[in-house]
Image (cartoon, rainbow, N blue to C red):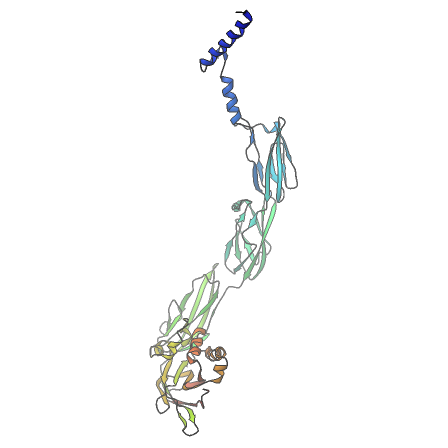
Length: 441
């Protein structure tokens, strides 16, 4: 065999021996496989930015970092930092980003010929509400939210009120309403100012009656209208031997005399109150009687309106506490029972076969009398039933709640009805008569 064939074959054998021996850590003092391992690790770790996107609030700063293959921060001075729009966000030689105004911009870090880009979104801080409405004495604390929607610590914000006589604001952003008016609250954060408007409305309490007459043992409700509505009302009597009052405003006459019932609440260290003079009288009685008829025809003439309903409603406010809010509760007027006499002072009866009715032992005072025909109907009602019901309710709203007055109107329905005001005097009988004439249908 020729020698020039042998040398290549020997060379191939030597290579084959090395490959068949598996991993060899060192040959002739030189690491054999170690360079392969380092290359694999380097492939899995690249130079990268700490954050590829940043959301930041106007005025805030953030320091960007470039990380090497070993996970170490590369010295900022070896990097060239740049912003594509310095009006939105700028960056200094140390990688510190400063948010200037709302917008989106791309920034970059250049290192050893490679450029690494990252985006910056700049947003304004903002309040949850641009305008708030509160009452005198109330307090409110609004939080300023950063670009990510997180609350900014109030200690990092400077607060100011445009009108301290209307609204004052603490170092922590707590607003207190002083008097009726408008003011603007300014919060300054990182050199940028943010504003919201405060409207202050009056705080008050009113009662539905300034004066009330009650008989011994009788009760009536006082209703308080007040703002704000999230306060607790306290009721009190100046003389509990004359009149007492419950936590819900129910006033009960105890003994003859005069007492002052007061409703009050306290807010912001100030007490708001309103009073009603209650005159309690000894119970003295009169009576009410009358006759109710209608025209049957020309031959029979006027006959008794048998079954017609007669209702007496006191004008002293007692009946205003009657609430009939359910749609079908108008039926309760048709079945008005004696239980209403004691609680609300409302009396009800029906006309008998002779056309007569009578209430004995009625406490003296002013009453609304409502007479509802049994046998006749109203042409006005058939023309517009809603208007007819509304008219009846209107005439009774000075002695009933709106819901009870409307329910009364519904109980009348298409029947003829007459409403008047009478006085019941001690020891006397008040006589009322009415003829409904012919029926519509």
